[in-house]
Amino acid sequence: MPAPTTRKTDGTTMNAPVKTSKLIKGATGDWEVVVGMEIHAQVNSQAKLFSGAATGFGAAPNSQVSLVDAAMPGMLPVINGECVAQAIRTGLGLKAKINLRSVFDRKNYFYPDLPQGYQISQYKSPVVGEGEVVVDMPDGAIRVGIERLHLEQDAGKLLHDQHPAVSLVDLNRSGVALMEIVSKPDLRSAEQAKAYIAKLRTIMRYLGTCDGDMEKGNLRADVNVSVRKPGAELGTRCEIKNVNSIRFIGQAIEHEARRQVSILEDGGRIEQETRLFDADTGETRSMRNKEEAHDYRYFPDPDLLPLELEAAFVEELKAGLPELPDEKKVRFTRDFGLTPYDAGMLVAERDTADYFEAVAGGGNLAGQGRDAKAAANWIINELAGRLNKEGLAIAHSPVSAAQLGAVLDLIADGTISGKIAKELFEITWTEGGDPKATVQTRGMRQMTDVAAIETLVDDILRRNPEKVGQAKAKPAMIGWFVGQVMKSSGGKANPRAVSDLLKAKLGVE
Image (cartoon, rainbow, N blue to C red; front, side):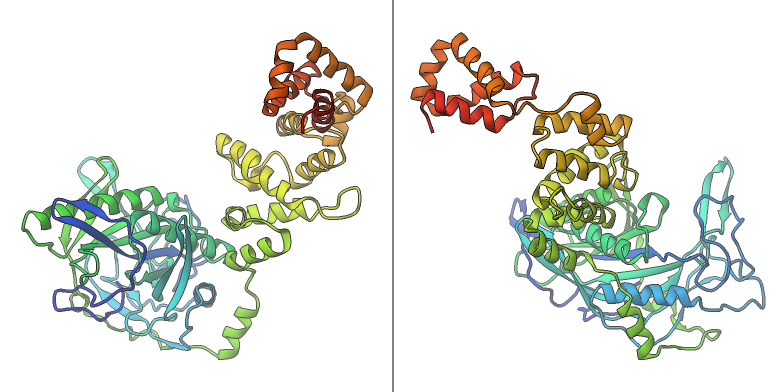
């Protein structure tokens, strides 16, 4: 649960920044969607937040449970320092304030997968305070405020399909460290919300603080949705719990917003409540009335002293941070001359950015860096397209950065044409090997002998006299002739030489 914010008596926020909105058309006019998110990100750590039990995914049920995790009498929690460091790194990556003093509290509620009868979390004094995330959208960047980041332990998991008459409890996740990242209500559409969580996941992956694997439950979102007339005060919000995919987040917001608009336009009122998203129907359904902070009876955990940090420790962590995606994007546009769009595509995943730098920074025959724009085009289009088709991550690409760089070198020095390069890429993908050796052994060098190319050009012109006249009247027709010559040469003729010869013989520019 987030810390209290300035709210009206009905629980809605008093104000919120205006953002570019996607308005919903209703019978009574336009409605604006307002979204805030609570992201639960599993901390990358070998041990749990308050015990030494392992955190690996896929272990047999109840095989990674310490006495602390199972709430055995007399067992006391001991803070995992690496989890604290990971939370601070994340806070620094979000340009947030790091609180040198924070407090762990007990959040009291009963559920079968919570053996203690309370969750150790942080309430009024989190480890990380306010920050900001910049999210690129097609119509410009938006700034999403971060209200807080706090550490808390995860609960266990109920298994409902193992036995027809009972539910079983798996405590492997009990005590796993989570970072709850609470945004301000700055998002104004499902698309913005999807882009926001994707950007947050990218930042944490760069930092190495959370792997962001939503299929494993390592990143989940509680989504707060309300609607209002543009410019009006915020409406009553409903919270959609534990949405576990970016696509589902978008669907849940779209459905919930329209549900609320329909109720309001029929003269009803929105009840503040917790809802669930049904992925099968694409709808949200009521789960329970929304709890308030007092329902959880928060109080400082008596078994844990306040967490007090040295400023020097925070500075040391800050000095060890990697280059983050926003800074990398600026560098790619400045140093490599890429467009902001291409740079943004490349930095969205750290492995992709590293792959690009390995390709673009490699030396060509002149001992200089390769054509960065060509490298970006090949990675964004040819490589990414094939990876998506095969369902592979770039870290498992059959074509290495060195191999793609070799293909680009062969294009740059005129050994092969762009068409041949695509054939070479396909061979390298399926068979591997050194692209330069492949070109040599398979006779894939492009034809650069001007006399030989001229013979092909003359033959095509001689066999198409009617199109010659058309091309002289309409120079754009020259492209047809280029295609015919390339086809005649098996794609090996140098396209530039073909084009130059055609222009000279047809007398067009």
